[in-house]
Image (cartoon, rainbow, N blue to C red; front, side, top):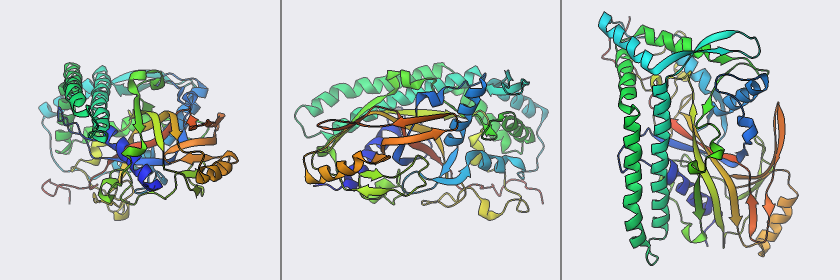
Length: 462
């Protein structure tokens, strides 16, 4: 019989293979990704996402503040998701505040090209602050960037469809008829990926990437204007709320929970459980694995309190749920600065201990990774042998617990925002339990390479 750790590891490896594995059909490059898994998940009611992306009421501002603070937590490396005490906003501000830049002189033609690229990517939009009534010009992503994000998401969904079907095929490869079915389905799914890429290209993929590349190249020449624009954009996105200042972070697409096409049905049966190597776990557990025990009680949604584990029966376990990958959009962030080699910290202002990452595995630094997308689950169904002594004992404890988790899923929780209080609970039946609500089970994080990593070939001020 496989252990509880084997069940969790197999489930997380299945999730990783669907949401973060590279596109092997059209070979569109992707940044190195790491899954920071919530153990257990964090309930997320759609009402918490009821805020506008430009115009908002006072109540919506508070919801936007809650979500933005949550989405910009920098997690610790290794094991399950835990707040590091750092925020992406703070780490980004540290970089763009007063960097040392190369000394160079750009031509008038190069400066003009920069302005043209910036105009393609950004437009100003008048936005009224609901608290002060003040109207500001806010730089927002242009229609070109918005279309880029939209079609990039559709392409990734097509890749996820392929990877999900491939994972199911590989799990049942030795069953009669499976090779034949996969041989028929594979070219259909591959064509869907190519079609999605063609639509992405028609929507201006190359134009946006060329504009971004031009700005990146000029940055390498010491373009002061781009850094001034980053600081100005960061400042204009700052908003006030009862909980304090925040920088608006959005999700995409709007009301994603109503779009059935963005959710993928995942099923892990007992026959698919296997032992996952420690090397594979570096993609989602930092190589450290997780505590043994599927059931957890006593954890709160902050994931800071102590929780205890209860032994589960894995003899006939089966897990089914819907999974969605929801990108996080930050108009105030230019993430390319983390990879740029055309800046460095002023050692008189920022010590070496404040470097973001050393680029190693396992990494060290103040921000070795940051969240770029949420992973959400809903309609979770966990089947197991409820007649066994182990399950009977476990359920006695679970029924009397205020907070309950099963692997990466929250099964019962009371959670509070300063504007709302909600309850999240499971439904018990003869086969096991069902968890109908929506919850964050983890974040796709982008790994930060060595940062800062100034190019010694550039002309640096002495």
